[in-house]
Amino acid sequence: MEVKELEKITSQVRRDIVRMVTAVQSGHPGGSLGCTDFLTALYFEVMNADPAAFTMDGKGEDLFFLSNGHISPVLYSVLAHRGYFEVSELATFRKIGTRLQGHPSVSKNLPGVRIASGSLGQGLSVALGAAAAKKLNGDDSIVYTLHGDGELQEGQVWEAAMYAAGKKVDNIIATIDYNHKQIDGDIDEVLPMGDLSKKWQAFGWEVLEMDGHNITEILATLAKAKSMTGNGKPIVIVMTTIMGKGVDFMMGTHKWHGSPPSNEQEAIALSQLEETLGDY
Image (cartoon, rainbow, N blue to C red; front, side, top):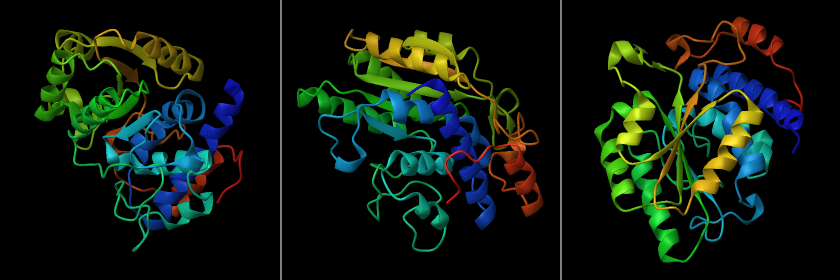
């Protein structure tokens, strides 16, 4: 896809996010808006995966695990537009009995979702298990993950990071959404993380950095990361983003981590986001 085509998709995905969380007055718009460019590029251009042939084991195709599962709105929108399920199903977000739970769930067999997530800190461990399984099966596909920066305050992440380097798990590419915000404020106020790139390097990972809102840079960085797989070291991308990207009054503040906009605020937000693929 051309970059302009991907940017059109991101605009629609951001509209979907705003509309989903407003409709039920529940959900997490801030991080979802911030990770839209990355997930759009990943699913529409980078990953080797066939929505029409989705299976839980994912043999012969790339896998993605969303560790920070509270940003489910962006994942659901991207999956729908990619063809995993009908876009109209986005209207059921967070409603009783829906497949589109507030955090991704496997209980109702939603195509595109392989683990229940949102209990922060667990995603990397699960992804490493999947990466190990691919090695055992002679499957040279890649496992991708996404994590929040505040999530890195969980000790399990660093246990998994040590394991990945120690066992030379080199078919995994983890990405950190480095927006410096978490539910209670700036990460440096809640619990400082230090220099994330140097920290991951110290744990034995290959580290790349990128602007999470520049589609061209995202594609180039992911391509470089793919070229580095198979060399005995796990790979992590520290991705700088802005929470609430695309909606001016949401940008750069933790207040929109898990707060839905009012109907009036929704109208303002949607006026800033072009409808490119048609609203559900």
